[in-house]
Length: 232
Ligand SMILES: [Zn+2]
Image (cartoon, rainbow, N blue to C red):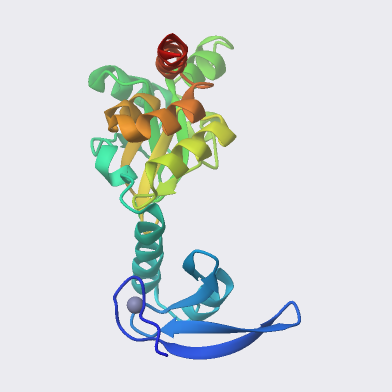
């Protein structure tokens, strides 16, 4: 019996592989370049196989593949590109601390993303870094370079990442700002407060991840619990 690909609906080709000493069938969709394995509740993506097959792809094709898998696995959960701010201010590592401070003051923001020539994030610099690493030790802000005081490497996520997964990353890494990339290039930024834009059905899942990082979400969780106990 032919199995159709859950993503594109095309027929798949069935191959069999050995895994942990057991022969198991995989259904390969040559259009999506995804191998599906039979699981209890239907077909699931076989990651090792996907990776092995994806290795021959160029960057664009590989990005499209990961995006397709992420879309499929997220099943309608909003993505970072749905909630991110595209207005992200950048600076290069060779600029001075003074230039960084001036840029933050002009734009009324508290952080800058440090990017390389290709627009790939290399670090992040906050107003706190300027205070702690320049003002307090009384260093000359014209002589200190951004690269000396930035936090690097910086944790980023691709724009197709679903917001529940992203909130987990932020909790695990204890970060309040997450630069968003497309094929590795900076395209936006998401802060803890941006997650409040999510609809109520997702908000609760996100709030438990972000409560450790933000008063807003701590308050949300507390209120939610009170309402639930009131209903009982
Ligand atoms: Zn397919």
